[in-house]
Length: 476
Image 1 (tube, rainbow, N blue to C red):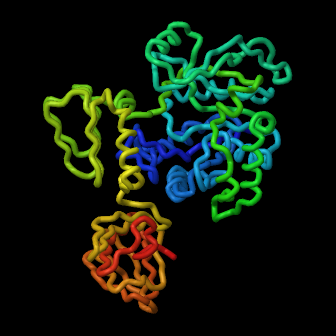
Image 2: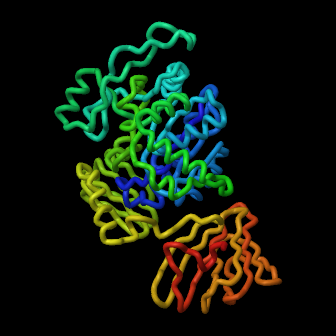
């Protein structure tokens, strides 16, 4: 059995303003009509002996993750909620503890949720080769055969060919190589040397090992991580369809990557080189490089008009974006921010995000909209006199609360339909209905249909906390 472990806890900032801390890259649709998380799960369909996945994510992403899994019909074996980010080594420890409780002989495959892999068949071949070695006790990392001198990735130098254990039905040399060295991101001249030598692969951040084997090495090299994760697991609690790790114990866990904690120190490491159109999509330039281009080498998405524009990426989320006389530019529009950058400087967007964080700007953290158990809410206009949100109630979901605590709350129905109960009265609602809701009313708004029910909510003379959205329609 191979248990895929999807690492979905990242908070990527290099694709700002589309990616935010509360809605990061892995939740976005960047290459097709599926999100990066959904594509990660779908591409392992058909692999022999692949079990239902585990997903490890930040607790603030729980609703988004659950909705995206549901959207592709995936029922996970576990969703672990991290109260804080602690890098990949603690995530591997938690997954190994759970996997051992399911099947002591299970293999686990660690997959970041935000990668692109174009050739799924070759990827499956690499998984099969990795499983042979992992079943024999090796700790596997998957190395991407480089096709250019990339300075944004770490590298792994391959050593001698690694034999497949006779106990695994093999013998002789397999597809793997012993690991000679992990190296950090190089400068351009060094990267060119790596490429020319043929001895180096990019570090993909994907791994496979038997749960017991990796835990044995973690206990040897990083016992403090294992101890903290065991305590966080034991003191954690089930929360609906997820498992919430104990905040105090997990928060005390050292933050480290599985590369540093184990793979660079173990003598059991084997690298499986593969070539399958892999990319970690770590910048807008990378999105442009893999995107579908027009005749002028532009990648265009949304409501965009261009004239005399070439080799550029232009994304529109809500408004018309027009470009004239541009070359090698990145333009990304969202409802509350617009990024304009040269293609060569696209990586430096992280400096803008750092500045926003230091200034306490909400644009670094969240979009104007937030996912909730019943759908999502978009902040339209918060001020001292009015607080306006657009509520989008998903099909087969409902809002229910007892009293909203405001002097005046109004709902204006602008799309879809549903059933509204206020105290003991029930009625059908839809455009152009408008109504005021008493502060102490018992309210239930249900959407029984297959399309979103959209309501404009206006709160007068009181502004709720926009960061928590605990009032004005959210279930209590």
